[in-house]
Image: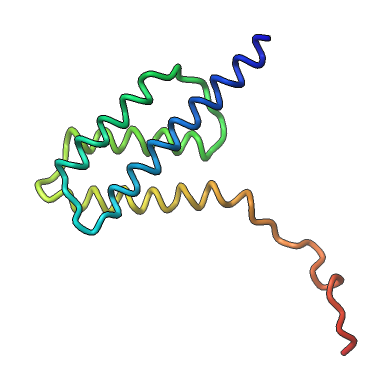
Length: 120
């Protein structure tokens, strides 16, 4: 029974982290980006993370996800006036994070030469 509970906590924690990530990225990608609105919404989204019990995560993607969240929060406290550099850095990190997440779903065919033979 405790095993199921641990799994549920883990899944819930991961979902909250990913929800924060997607919301943050969509805010960063807005054409009419507003630093104050970004701060306000990001802190509001962070409240959701605080409500969930933190669980140890070991995969590279999830560790990087937590690092991204921490970086975002530190930028909220200390940032330049325009926030442009921070925004670009966060978007670049988000892109790398999405690549890391998707990396597992792309598999190279081991024997692609032997698969297709059109007779020529």
